[in-house]
Length: 147
Image (tube, rainbow, N blue to C red):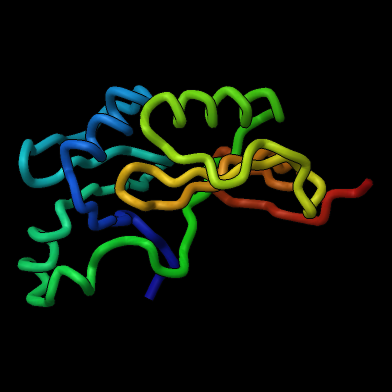
């Protein structure tokens, strides 16, 4: 199997609140928005984030809703070009309803970062990591930041 991720589906307890946060609050443009069902957001070259109502996703999967609600052992990350961008994005996320769990600050890895939790309970790290670079073809390079 080719190592590739095309679609990341996240179960959200309140689809309308998730839509308001990402679309109205952060200004992301849906690739497809099916009111009451799902919102698809392009988050990178060839990668969509699908916000799917938890009850609907549970029904689609044939499992109890408790098995699909976010909050498990994962964090999504958004890497930006500077510490100032981290501060700006965290401020915009907070204004859109996110809860800041770690304010913008120097990171142990040598960059600058913060953590927020969106209204659905999804954890995001917003970071400036000068050791991370993406080529035009999508190849990711990550390395130790020299002090």
